Image (cartoon, rainbow, N blue to C red; front, top):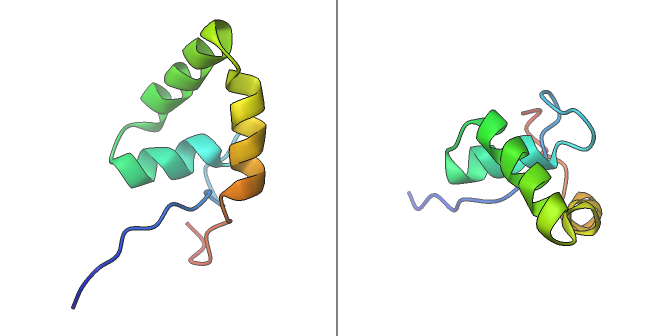
Length: 65
């Protein structure tokens, strides 16, 4: 069976919108590293705007994770 990897926002381990947890699951990283990356991205660019766009565009997980 062919498994397709999809990006979803998390329902359970979210601080604001679940974007960091969802991306950490997708890339198999620790969520703390993903959150630190978003903070650094926010300091050097449009990280807050990118987070809001991801929050709107990435669908919430239908699996409850």
